[in-house]
Image 1 (cartoon, rainbow, N blue to C red):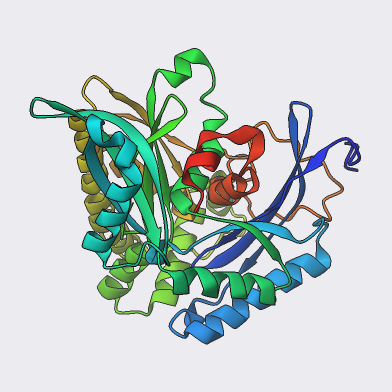
Image 2: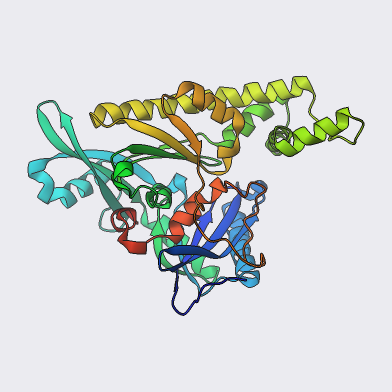
Length: 392
């Protein structure tokens, strides 16, 4: 049973991560220095509805109501994030002498770059740090913008699902917040780490140093791109390609290796992929993965040139596609930094009777796909930098 005292512990708002293929909800409780998972659930979405906006919305609302009905979630306060394809990100440099006019500079850039109305549409910024431009020292800002219609539609959807939105966040900020708690030792704060969330449609890249966000990039490459490449090479639909990719991943797992050994010794084996199909899948995924690795390499190069003297120590990968070994192997070969897969729930108390915590994963030791949801659930805790500066 859950062992903390809810009267003395602080129940956090629900962290809601609405992805392309699933909806994840998690609620945390803090008690002293311990963070525990009160409830968690995940519902997979039918990818077939993603082309129909209203059908997808109805499915998301239904999934949220389903999780609220059967879970142990307390209250209806929620922190969620905007879809990555609705978020606009740009960088802006201003002279130190103009720092007191930062709001004016950001508003002007929002109009010039995106044609949005800063009096109506949502905008926020993060001060990334000082950079040298020629003989001048300037302040680099990361500007995050979303139009008013997107914000209103998102809030309406949450309210239709009987939730009470207390904050609307962004994927980059939630991702950084999820891992910022591990960067509080002095030696950690002196190192630069890049956090990379590889989702279905987008890969979100966040550079962090000293408890601050230094650089953000969204790359339109993700799991859907991998599956489309496989589908095209094999002449099948994307759904079938996804099933073959999952089958290939399972064949490479320890359990599958044990099953293969059983088959060789006369036991019953799995229906394994033939060698030619396996090679086509590997080649197709490798093509897109190499493109993603190139984009990440350019991000690292930009960062090290822009923020001179700040070397990137390691890259931490999260998201559902961080389990893709073909991708990870290519990244280890092509990137000049240490690669590791995230464990966003590491150090959290997961002890429960099992009825209220459904992490829907056979990889319980990693659970890297929960990074964004965890970051949303932590928003505002201890006044973290990511929560104060970057929440939309």
